[in-house]
Length: 241
Image (tube, rainbow, N blue to C red; front, side):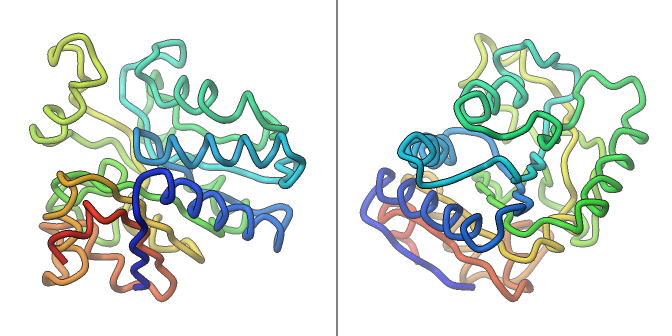
């Protein structure tokens, strides 16, 4: 695992966008695995800037998002579908048919997840996976205790995750209790992985991910078993290493 410590969130976002741009420059039809949330939002803004400057072309890029709340419609402002289209996709020249997002309104979660795995395989796998990290070490919605070989599936969210994500909702009662997520096994099949972390609240879990035992109790530690991971963190997130 390569650990890169940067000054602040802005520099983290700029460097993350540059790594994505370099990947697409090397392979125009790159398959990207994408994350949502506050941490990657700055990276998406920087990628949009690069696109508008003519520095990057998304016309052949294929994307797969990590996860989606179960029971939220695409039109819901807290859905990851809404986040991705209104933060990133609508501002670049990606083809709609190349964008893959889990359907939180599916009436057959098992089939939805199996199809998602199939489409990833049909696309020859993910070239570059972008990840954030939860305060409890989750990747996507793979909570503590998740098998390292897990695949895309319906999961129940940990209370800690529900509490943490309640800031995006008007009331904690509105936070979905379940989600669809790529599994840790699915994530680990990516050719390259970039993990982004910023802020003091992420410092304890960043330290555990880098220096603690590899354990399902801290799902992010599985990344130490991958041969091409870059952990891009700001000084605050790195303060307990």
